Each structure stands twice: as C-alpha cells, then as structure tokens.
Length: 127
Image (cartoon, rainbow, N blue to C red):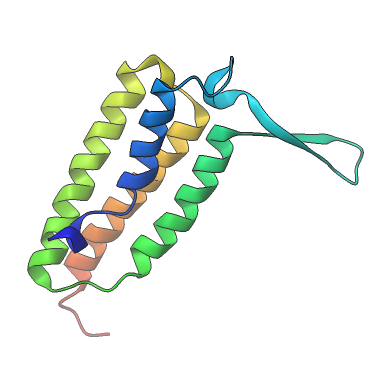
C-alpha cells in the first residue's frame, strides 16, 4: 500500500516542516545563496526555490513510476486528490504557504492528480 502514496507528499511535508523551523529571518523566501550570472545580474536562490525544483524532479519520478495494479492506481489517485485538497486549503488558509514556491508545488500536485485521471480514463483504450 505504500506504493500507492504519491511521492509529492514529500515536498509538501518538507515545506510544512520548514515552516515550523526558523530557516532564516525571512523564512523560505530568504536567499540561501546568490549565483553571479554572466549578464552581470545576480540570481538569489531561496529554500522555497530549491524545494520547488526538487518537487519538479519528484513529479517526474512519480509520473514515470509503474502502477502496481488497478487497485494501487485507484488508491494513488485518491491520495493525490486528497493531497491536492490539502494543498489548496493550506495555500488559502496558512500565511506561510501563500508563496510562489508553495503555489508551484500545489500546481505540481494538481498535474499529478490530472495525470492519474487521464491514465484511468485512457488506460483501457488501445491506440
């Protein structure tokens, strides 16, 4: 049953954990480091940016992982929808989640749920 858990629960849980810890004075939006660009500009990378980038990689892995069967796929879809509802509720109700990084993670959870619906609908059709 653990295979049915969507992997995107990891970045969502980590984001919530980091909200509880004092990462920096500015929280998840405070720059962790700055990269000097060849254009002369500076790219300030925050913990939220790193977490959103990691969530993109996790989304790719989650979309590529094989299903363990129709029951596991249905359970994964149900859990993805529950995670989406939780993310939307957090985005709207939790002050620390009203960031671009969390919005992007929520969008990734939405895409994961939509991919699950598409796979369920198109799964029985032959090309």
